[in-house]
Structures are given as structure tokens and as C-alpha cells.
Image 1 (spheres, chains in turn cyan, green):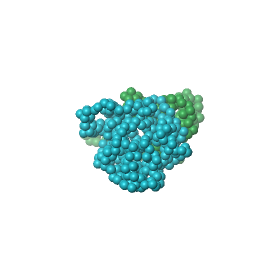
Image 2 (tube, chains in turn brown, green; image 1 turned 60 degrees about the horizontal axis):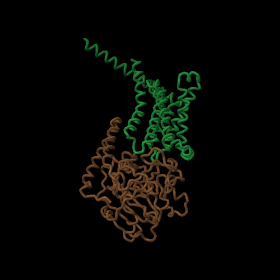
Image 3 (spheres, helix red, strand yellow; image 1 turned 60 degrees about the vertical axis):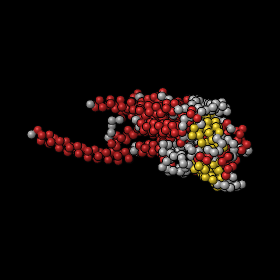
Image 4 (tube, each protein chain N blue to C red; image 1 turned 120 degrees about the vertical axis):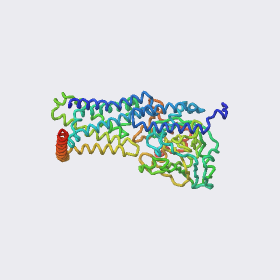
Length: 314
Length: 226
């Protein structure tokens, strides 16, 4: 392992000021989009600034040998409807989002309910996990996350015997998250896992990517990452985790019950009315590649689903 | 003067219709077409085609209702440009995005209703482009108009395609659909006659106002010349 001197590490302060520069550059770019011709120029300036700050991840590929996506792609192409439905401008709209102070309340059917400060959560042993993220919209990325298994957190609060599901909730604050003013969705964002899915070693609570604090547009300060499920299951900016006895209804299940089920496991055989699930475009590639059962994590998770009924993939 | 204005409108139409193509090429060249450029190009060409189709449909009601005739000579071109963007949209989706993978395309057609109506909408435009010349217009006579009414269905299906394509929030597609339906409703003979009668009344009003204004101006001129 390469030794890194503290002096080599960009201090959080400098890093943050650089980020706020990028944010204002982003705001500038989106403003100039009104003048379409200039907008393209400003946006280019933004993306080249983004490339300049491309950080190194300790792993350059996933376990299948596919390269990790660039920091720029990961942080400038985001589905985060709490800010906007436009994937490319989320980054320009997160300027007012405060991720500190931040608390995560863990309760419900547990013996020792707790409220964690975001700094407490840094106390769980952090590790890097390189995961494929497969969006239900038919695109995918390889992302080097930093975080800790959700199982460590759940063990800490001691679930009761009748806790069958875990319910997650995103912050609800329309002033900071203007997309939540849209009456179209039943805010706040809610997601859920079966308890055995939640306790699985692959299920990660991510607090960073590329070795840096999680950027707001990627779900800061803490998000879920469930790599064998479609991306929308990996809820962002979590404030509440409850252990419950009944299957929770997620925001997407409520919005389009015929399109989004509770399990949403990646499966090329289960079609979706809009997007091809048989194939996907890896961001950065031209032709589509085959989508893998359970997003390539079948060896690890197929045993969770002994009867492979389609409802488990829906 | 009139001739100059006609040329101006022609020039403006071609420039406006080609601008989205220029911007697309520019952004592609600048590597600024999002992290998923193929998807972005598909959406942009589709949106441009829909906007052009909607404008094409607006030109006739603008004339019958408001007497705005100036755009009628460029209506044909706007339709042709719309069809060109549709062709590009199809090429990007079939050729680049799906890489001519016919199994995947078959799945799209049978499992994805948005793709089916999109294809139908696009195919409807082909005979219209082919018969857009004066020669075909002469050869088909009365039938030319009948044939070209299929643009109504084509535009309507395009808005259905858009509505089925978006994830959950269908407000913007519904705005397009409402505009297209409105533009079609304005073609119903009874509504059109009512509209043109209203327009005549309006223009008579306008004429009288203008006449009074001119009279006043003339008297002002005579006052100053005194």
C-alpha cells in the first residue's frame, strides 16, 4: 500500500471551496443555457474543470475487469428528483444543500433505538467497494464507493425478532430540495429492503466515493447502495431508518405500481414498458452490453431468493 | 418589399430549423452531450421533430383565425425538416443505440408501446415527404390534400409516444398533446368558420382604428405644414 502523507491530502476546506467554485460555475452554465450558443461553451468550461479534479480511486476496475467510471461522469449525471428531473443539472442545483449538521434516526422494532450524528457514523469501519450501478433507465456505471455495511449499523441497534423489513426515508425539506415542491410525487422518498437483504454483506451505507466525502448530488451525506437492485432502490440523503414488520411502500411503488415493485432485482428477463432491461449502456461506451442477472452479483445473492418467482424481480 | 419579406421568412425558417442540428453537432464535437450522449441525441432530435410538427400544424389556423398568411409558403419546409429530424431520431435509436440488434428491436416493438406508436407516427410522414413536390401535388389532385391529412394522426401519435416515454411526470407531454389537439380542433369546419368570422370582425375593427389613426396623422401633418 502506498503511504500518503497528511500534507499530500487536500484539506477538506480547500476541497469544499473548490466544490463551491464548481457549483457556481455550474449555476453559471445553466444560466447561460438560455443563450443556447454560449451555454455550450460555459458547460464545456465546467466539464474541463471537472476533469482537472479527477481523483484517483485505489481500484481501477470492478471484479469483472470493467473500468470504474470517471469522477466527472459519476458526479455530473445524477438521478435525484429532489433537486430536478434533469440528470445533468442536479449538480448545479445542490448549492444550498446542507449536509452538516446531519442526524440519522434508527428506530422501530429495535431494542436500542439511536440517533446518530453523521460523525458517529464515520466511526463504523470504512471500506472501499467497487460496485456496478444499474439504473432502471437502461444505463450503468462502475462506482468506487466508501462506506460500511448496513449490517454493522443494524447490529448496533439490535433488531427485534418481528422486524421483517427495513424502511428508509430521505430528508424532506423543499427549501433545500426544490424538486420536493413538485406535487407529482409522494415525498419524502421512501425505500425498503427485506431484513435479510438489509443484513447482506454487499448492502452498503455509502458516505463517500473516490475516497472523498459523498457530493450532495450523489446522496450526501449518507446513502444506501444495493448493487444487485435497480438504482432507485439505493435511497439517498437518509435521515430515518425504521425496522418494521410489514413491507414498506416505496415512493416509486406508490407512483407507478405496475412498473416498480418492491424487490426491483436486476433481471434481463423481466421487461419494463419503457426501457430495455435485456441490455444496458455502460456510461462511456457506445454499444449496449448484456445486463447480468442480479447485476452480476448472482453468486452472492441468488440464495436470498430460493423461489425465483418473477415478483422478486419486479 | 413583399418579395424581400418573403425571402426573409424563408431564410429565417431554414436557419431556425437547422439550428438544433447545428447545436447537436457542436455539443457532440465539444463532448458536451451529457454522460449518455446517445440518449441525449435521441431525445433532442425527437423533441425538435415534435416542435417542428406542432409549428407546421399551427400555420393553417394562424391564417384562418388571424389572417396571418406569411408562414404558409414555408409550411412545406417545416414539415420536411420535421421528417428529417424524425429520420435522424430513428437512425440514432435503431442504428447507434440498439446497434441494429433486431432481437432487441423486436422486443422494443412488442413490449414497449411508446416504441410502437413512435414508429407508426414516423412512418406516416414518409409518403408526405415523398409527395411534397409540386409535381406530386398536381398528379394527386384532390387526393393530395386527403393524403396529407395523415399528418394529423402522425402528430397526435407523436405526442402519445412522448407521453408514454416519460417516467411518471407527464405534464410536459400533455402540454404538447393539448396544443396539438387544439390545433386539430381549430380545423373542424364549424369552428373554423366561426373563427374566420371572428377574425373578419376583428380586422374590420382594426381597419377602422387604422383609418382613424391615419386621418389624425394627416391632419397633424397639415397642421405642421401650415
